[in-house]
Image (cartoon, rainbow, N blue to C red; front, side, top):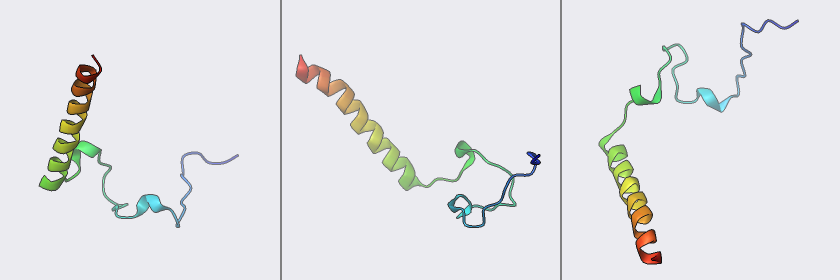
Length: 60
């Protein structure tokens, strides 16, 4: 029977690229982000809101 408590390690995994495997686990809100990321998110939000409100008005 396999020991489920020890995860298998794949040395050729893309999941560990750019990550410190020895660091404590973090979640996305704790990750660093730049002002560029904030700007891109704001643009995506603005386009999404424009589409969601403009299309129903144009279709009416």
